[in-house]
View 1 (cartoon, helix red, strand yellow):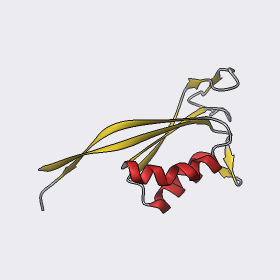
View 2: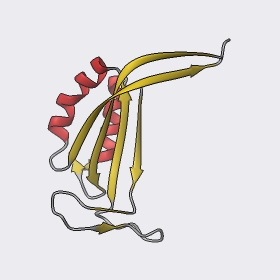
View 3: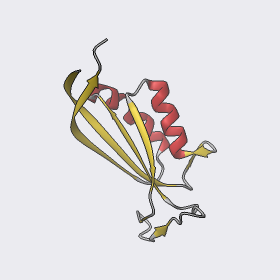
Length: 112
């Protein structure tokens, strides 16, 4: 097995289930745009509890999902690729929090 190491960026977007972009769920629109831009990867996580700018604590229950359940989108790629994504996020994220971190990306690959 061969692996490579490279510097990268990790973007975490914190929003809610209710957030929308042009009539579509914000997290779905962001993941779709990441795919269109060729971003290495994006994953959406639904939280059980959280709060944001409103300071109201929102709960998500396992049986019935709350419309304001916390959502986190995790995106990872090179610094250049993430730099191309940021202007898109500026337009799409109307309310929420975006955190960007420097990371080391380790890619594991099976030798062919």
